[in-house]
Length: 260
Length: 271
Image 1 (cartoon, rainbow over the protein chains, first blue to last red):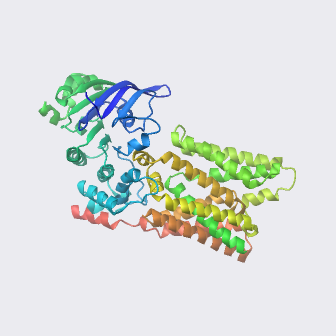
Image 2 (cartoon, each protein chain N blue to C red):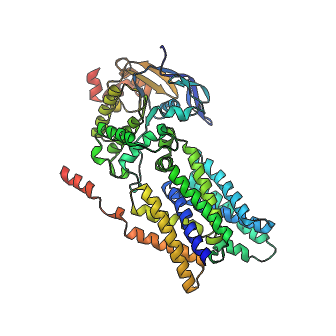
Image 3 (cartoon, each protein chain N blue to C red):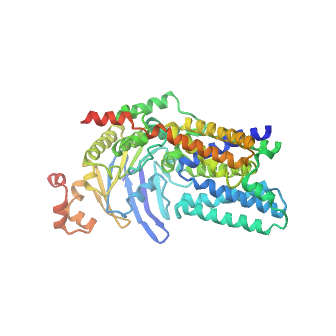
């Protein structure tokens, strides 16, 4: 792959005795929409956090947007990488509005001693419009439902005007309607904003079917990398989740079966 | 008395502003651990014959240096690490009291505080610290807002969230140290927590929360001082009790306890 936007080479991450990533290499081109699938504890989130410098490498190297990620440049790098985590419980009394939460996305790029100006607020309002949250802009964030809070998280990322969009199980714990709406929105925003998107999930229902590429992870390693048509098969899922093929066939969502 | 009124005003601002961090970071025991560390350090100063404020400052910074990494790395839960620091410093404090060969009234003054006898130099120190804290909050409001809302988000958008957390701990330690003589090691925690916790009940706006917390902190100081003077009561304890009553009133009249009209409307609209 020529000039990948993300280049991970032999990345090893360990927490004391536990190895979270055992030597992973991965190249991602600009504009790709990559789904990263695997069971719990496969190292998906760890891989994602290497891209925005939140994770600490024990060995190997990570290059993002042409620069090797180091302790000294990771703050700068994060300003160009949007990150949406799983739904978190927010205190209902937290004194911060939806609009202010979205503005947090711009704080890094604004830098110290600079206050948000008219342009920044206009960008915030535009991103709230894009995720359909304008009508809740002045509500306290803690009063929103999980699905609404995830839309706000996505708006926060977009307000950051990132080049790379990282989503870590963004639909976990959401109901089916909220899940499908978020997935459609992520794909639309990826296309409209020409982003490079990494979408982590352990749930096949939550995998956008329009992924350009799928990476399967297990036990801290990448076990397969290719197109969804090729990789989302009964055989590979059986291997990935340690379930007999017959059981995979029974349990797989109908939507995937139809597609394949 | 003039010094006492000024000390209550400045101590109220400093403690209650730091209290907003403590409340929003959900780490109320930072105040307990810090105040007991400062108390132990001050007693060490009394025992060994150097300025108690220096001992208090060094010990509270030491506590911050222990609490910070433990809370930050998540290896031990923040509550556990704070509990350990609290019990260690309390043990040290009583050890130093036991080792003191002479009168212990100075030690008790540090425990309960004596705002009515604070000197001009204490007031000047309180003024400097209050000014620095308020100035830093105004200057770095957006960074503070991001960190107290969610430290991981603050990190992910490129803010130096860990540095800001350590700065908050440092400010807490400094505030506790300079308020030690007037409010006292045992009571200062309440003045840090109560006005901020009361303000938390009253607004959904963080800027207003800082402002309300400072106002309630000053009110606690002045009303407490007034009752202490009128009824000849211990000043530190009266100030803290006043702040507790203000907190209870805030709970009773909190708009956050009421049903949220917009949510009810939406639910009704869906039916």
